[in-house]
Image (cartoon, rainbow, N blue to C red):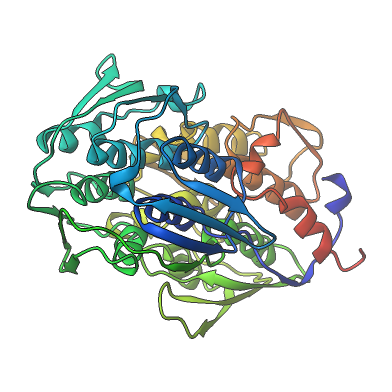
Length: 428
């Protein structure tokens, strides 16, 4: 990493495929009867956990250079796993398979790593219990999760908070429930599940924050092209905006409006970011070019935009530190239940470099000021890929060597992050 200091960056890259879309493509292709090709999937620790679980319930999955091929005999021929399942560090895998396995009526048990086993699963369990599922949690809240066969009925469910994971678990269960399952959102969460379920032939309707799915219909195979993950693209984008002499273009990135809130914040701040939308029949995609912006305005974000940039808030905190004005994030309490407590992690680690925060239960305010970090300070990554990559970007932008206790978790979402930055160095 130290070889990236005292450098400027220029060029074009492709970031890894969207993690959320890759997870869902594996699950839905397993439910479909036939062969599905998934092009440009994200190959990461998280998505391999989903792949292994789909294999364990009956899918045949092979890997080629730029695609995965899933062959399945359809949902009626899937079976209970022979052994307990392992979801690793993947919250998406853990929460979505609760709905999928309950909907299939399988007998299954799963747990994750130490981080996942401390993350609450009861908010997914609650609506599934209303549907008739039988699910047991440790201390009525945490993994290990035990799922027992039980017939499901459709429900009409008002989401208490915006959560694509909870919504998707309900919709996956609704595929096999008797009658119609309806989910109502007061604030929109990412809609990859709805887009892809329609692509695979589910009878699903959406409109005005209401999603309804009809149970009892078989899915048909489809071809999936996975766009670049905007959550991964956020790190080189912010690097470009903060690093003098830098311009970076990221090609074929997802521009799904339920995920692209960070682009709206960058516009609020006056950042030099250009977007070229590309033709697409499914997910919105485009090329994003970002370049150094010496004067950044502040921002104050809350409410409906938060679910659309929840994973980008750690790198937005760093962006805020270089603003000329204070920046506030509110309504983001969900961050305390990610791979780590990301609000506390951001505040604790960036404060070591003189960045001033006012921490709140549901977010923080970043106070503008001079950043003059001392070299070789020890920082923690919390085995959280978003925190680690944010710290690396800070080190590069500030030309300050830092000591991260463990950076291996980058492999969860962006295994080639350092290599991509190396390829963009002007003096490489």
